[in-house]
Image 1: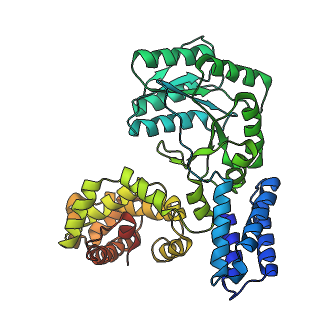
Image 2: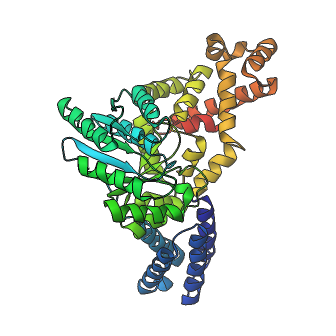
Image 3: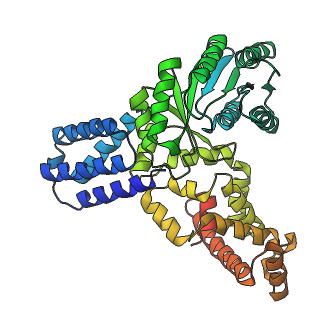
Length: 445
């Protein structure tokens, strides 16, 4: 998401930064291009009009023209106003009640069921005791899908055959009170478009459980249509927040920049993939940084701290410093890195300059295919080969290539990358005790 918008805004600001001084015409011309880039990204035209007006007012009012670094000053103003448009500060869930009830609403296909399970898992990691309510009785297999997700996550799912959605939701709340669970997440049915039957059913569920949170789940791929539907749900139910799904696709980003302004409710989470841990809290300021090519390193660090095995990382540092880094370690580092998600998502969170450097020096072409191929080669080796790569001769390479579905040249490539990574990690690990990262391991020199 935002790739096209980021590219166009980066071009605009690169030209402005190249000027030693800015006059009002420069600012006006630059903001005209910003306006066009936002409209092409499917941002609501009223939002664009107000956003550009605020930026222009501040740009001239804060004497950007007289600044020693006018281009940077203007970028800062754009960043601040983008963040303000998306909500300024992180909006958290209201979970003070026991049990707190979170109601998920939205159209069919937006990802409500998966999002309910993802958020349940997220809350479980935070020490909560969630329970899921399968109140979507219309979509085929919706109940089975939620039960399957709940079983995988070891989170209970409440469902009563032949009961109405409002009754199922109420039973889930009663079950939570009896069994001392503190959050109930209610999955509801959607339709292909808004209709009275769907709205009446969801309103009945709302009255039955009086939710603390009413989250509208929107498919980011639908752009402005998601904004219009959110406004309709907000008018009928009174939303408290938005969850944008499928933000890892090729959505242009207009919904993220428009939805809070149009319906008055904040984005609280964004879905970043199909995996159950593909849900991130939404930080407006960090998203503004990503849009402007500044990256989102804070989110990447938080994901690494929550996902990666810290004890394993510390042990890895010791091995590197003793020059004992093996192919086994290399494989484990790649597997650890994959826990953070697809490489493309990791690169999205790096600043544009660093992203270009990593892409040029480490990941060429299809990053995911490169890692899959590398792991296939490593997993086809015996433990003895991974611990002692020097024994891998011609016949072993042929066997490894057959076992991994690759060619001998791919095996040679992996061995060469390993040697590069080994040298790089030794250098990185020796710099003032800095801990090497999975990206360092895969990146080579």
